[in-house]
Length: 402
Image (cartoon, rainbow, N blue to C red):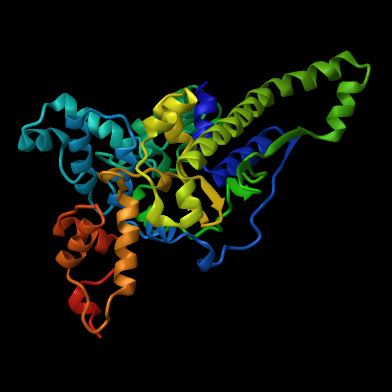
C-alpha cells in the first residue's frame, strides 16, 4: 500500500526515473513508455497553467497545504510558515519562537511544520542542514534509507574528509554500501528553495486525455502515464526452460517486479477514476474555457469515487490533463468558492477578460472591476481584485494606460 501511494503521487517523469533505477538494479527487466519528443507550444498550454508555472514557491506551497485536510488552526500556522522561509527554504527562526510569538500551542506548530515538510520540493521547511537532507530521504528504500540517515546524522565530516573505509567499519557495513549511500547523499540539495527556482522547464505531456466524441466525453490515461514493466525475452526463455534452478532464479526476480507492476496499474486505475469525475464536474470549463470553472473540492471527488481525500490529492499532483482547452494541470481543476456559484479561478479568468476588453485609454480601476463582477453575481473586495490581478501578472490601471 505504501508503494502504491508513493507511485501514485509521482509525476510521470519521476515515475520513469524510478523505473530506470529499477532496471539498473534488476537488468533482466525493461520498461516501455512513450516519451515526449518536443516541448508543447506556448499557445497550446492553458493560460492558467502558465500562471501556475510562474507562481512563487511560497504560493505553490500554500496551494498544496490548502489541499490537505488540516484543522483550521494548523492550516493558518502552516500558511504562515510557508511565508517565513529563508532563501534556502529553511525556517527563518526556531519553531518554538514562532509559536510563542503567535500565541499558538507548540503541538499545533509542530503539526503545521510537518504538513509543510510533506510538500514539494523535498527538504522544504527544514530547521537546519541535517534535517533538510533527512527530509529528502522519503523516497529512498530500506535498508539504504537507514544507512543514509545514519551518515547524515553523525558522519558528514567523515564523508567530507573521504574516510569511507573507516566509516564502513564504524557502521558495520561494506565499503561498497557506504560508497553507494554517499553517492546518493551527494545528489541531495542543501538548499531546496534555490534548487526549485532553478528547475529546468520540461516538455509537457498529458497524463490523461479528455475528448468529446459525438456529444460524449471520453477519458483515457496515456501510455506516458502508464509505463509497462516487462521481463526481457532471454529471461522469459529461462522461465520456459525445463531447468528448475533457472526458474527459481527468475521467479525471485519477478516477485519484486510484481509489486511495482501492481502499484503502476493501481495508479492508472485511480488516475482514470479521478479524471472521469473531474471531467463530469468541469464539463463547462472544458467546453467554454476558464471562466466556466466551477467550485470544486478534493472532498467532492473523494466522496464521489469512494476514496480518501489524500488519494485524490496524490492522484492529481503533478499530472496534466489534455483537453480541447489545451494542457491543464489537474490540480487547477479544483477551486475554492469565492461567491455563490463562482470559483476563484473563474473569477480570475473573468477579471482577465474584463481587462482585455477595457478602453486602453481609460483602464478600469480595481474598484470598477469589482463593481462589474458584482453586477454578474461575483462579489469581491477591491483588495481581492488587486490580489488576483497581481497573480495574473496584470499591471494596475495607471500602468495599463496608453
